Amino acid sequence: MPPAKKRTRSYDSARTRAAVLAQFRHVREAVTAFTPEQLDGPTRLGEWTVRELAAHLTMALATVTRRLAEPEPPRRELALLDWPLATVTEAARIDEDTRAIDTADLAALYGETAARYEEAVADVPGERLIPTRFGAMTLADFLVTRTVELVVHTDDLNAATGAGIPCDRQALAACTRLLADALAAKAPGGAVEVRIPPYAVVQCVEGPRHTRGTPPNVVETDPLTWIRLATGRAEWATELDGARVAASGERADLMDLLPLMG
Image 1 (cartoon, rainbow, N blue to C red):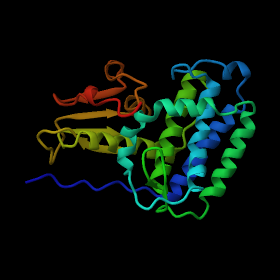
Image 2 (image 1 turned 135 degrees about the vertical axis):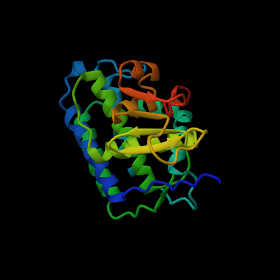
Image 3 (image 1 turned 180 degrees about the vertical axis):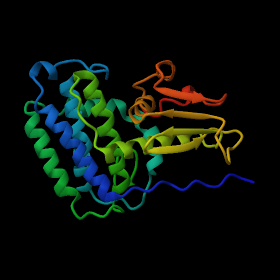
């Protein structure tokens, strides 16, 4: 009997919109308090300084505003689960766009970005199609990708500065779930159960399918460790050795499947 087709996860568009803004506000509060020395400090993202990373974070919302101002595409071209694997193709252009942002007044930049986002998304249906770097998506789907951008780079800021910027619960949940579902799409199957409490459980990897009782192959970790693994911020072996990942069963090795996006 063929395996049952998995239903695509749905997201509450209103909650996602609010989560994007909430996470941006957390970042804004921290960034506007950074000293010049902190802003000029290094990050784990190649040559980017904290200032450049902070500028890049404004693109998460500014892109929504800019794309909504463009004509609506005639048809959907990109599904939500295709987005994580597509991002690596635009790394050079994203770096170029980030370096072009005027960072002379970050407080003003963040304030204007938030205000324009709130105005742009007000009363726009989630089904509205918008153009993106990778193809036309629904606004609802694109906003889920914004939670990934914001949560991942919030973690980058914390790693660089020790600022302890919090993650909005809804934003963290959406980010975790999208990256978990992207793993299941990349390696379809039911041999391994990946648990990321309290937000996601997915089955993946070809092989004998688990149907009842305790799964023979289980991977479990916390949301931020999972996000770091999925985006190349952490190494599978290191997190396993540090007991931040628990893996049981002969198939419970995800090293060759990670990262999902860079």
